[in-house]
Amino acid sequence: MWTRRAFLGSLGAAGALALADSVSKARAAIALPEAPPVSGGVLREFELLAAEHKGGVIGKAAKDAGFWLYNNELFPIVRVKRGDTVRAHLKNRLSEHTSIHWHGIRVPNRMDGVQYVTQPPVKPGEDFTYEFTPPDTGTFFFHSHCNGVSQIGRGLAGILLVEGDEPKTFDDEYVLALKDWRLAENGAFLPFYTEEGAGRAGSFGTVRTVNGQESFAQTVPAGKDIRVRVLNLDPTRMIDLGVEGADAFVIATDGNPIEPFPLHTWRMGAAMRVDLQIRTPEAGKSFTVRDYFSSKPWALANFTAQGGGAPSSDFVPRPLYAPHIPKPDLADAERITFRFSAAAGAAASIDTGIPADNPLAKELMDSLCTGQRGFWAINKAQWPTGGHQKLPPPLALLQDGRTYIFELMNGTPHPHPIHLHGHTFEVVSASRQDLPRFLADTVVVQPKERIEIAFVAAKGDWMFHCHILEHQENGMMGWLRVA
Ligand code: C2O
Ligand code: CU
Image (cartoon, rainbow, N blue to C red; front, side, top):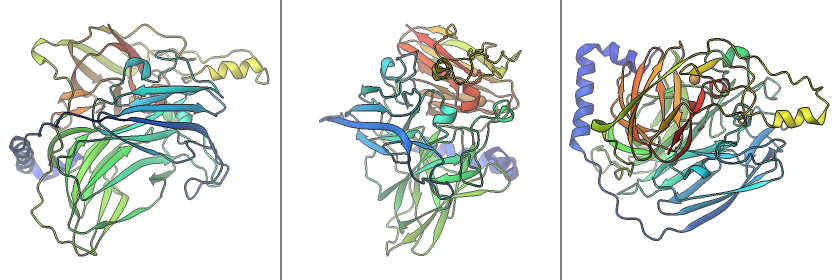
């Protein structure tokens, strides 16, 4: 396996040191410029129609596979500028209830899109309006927060880009949205949930795509600095992102600007994003964005350079504007430990005793946002099976404005991408990965690993869960109250 760690290992201690040294030099040499104050924000009003899509979406899928999309489009991209106000009208034309969670965006709590926690579920035929002014620039996405295993499994997600972070505009920009699909040979969807998957690393897709294409190819201008925004929208797969055939800097993690450092590989669990600055090669040459997670690297996207452009300068990092995340006060932080584990006893599955053709059975199923099995737990507590409307007690009570250091301990044999709603945290330390300090809303905790994250708590009831959706919906989810 050619993971980042294995790669460092194969260089030997000296190589690893040299790399660490060059990373710290790059980090020491560049400070992020301050963004100018925002002015002239406008209202960006649009509709998000959630409905079954009639027609093929990706190559192999039969027309009637049953994709669920926003606005009949796979991963529609909404672009706004920092300072703009988003007003999104969700129209639910699905056969079950839904809601929209704005992943990674520090929204007011009531706009967070978690049914029974921050809003009532949006029933079939109903509408709901989300309105907020994103405080941060970056690469974000939005998705359903109910029955995500199947709703997101069918495609119900979109991309929100908040612009205004580039001191100097890049020569070009591309978005790569990664998602696998659980499709059978005949093009119909396979079950999204499996017992084997939910109890282990998750159920993997059978068809891997980027922007809905099985072999994504793109021409780019030669000898330029381009920005590539990569989103892992798969509910299961971890990737080790790397670029072959071109040099790249990491310039943002989960949308948050970072002092640029050279990309070797960057591990991305479900829901994670990374922004790259890539120097494109000379005309006629290509480069490939790859996933190095498994021993057989996988080509995600192929780029071919075109045109007569020759690089006008050396490849130097172009830092984005400094982020606006409240700075944690580490000296005066409260520490809370969260242990992620297998559940002690599997929770009983729900048997309503109601025959399936009884309309009440349908209604009961509609109220379910979670799976039927409690495989996983956080601090020994599992989210109750059978729906969001039965809220467990909060995992912790926090104080508005106070700094917290969460210690995340993974006691399972599987990595978990752990996500906190409503906040952007700093990853302060990781015991089993070589990571710079960076800002994130989701962090991969390796088996037996201990990770520390720090953030300033903001008022509200916020979900805290693994973003492998079969883990989330089968116990590994909780919530925090910040008052
Ligand atoms: Cu993107 Cu509660 O998650
Ligand atoms: Cu998990």
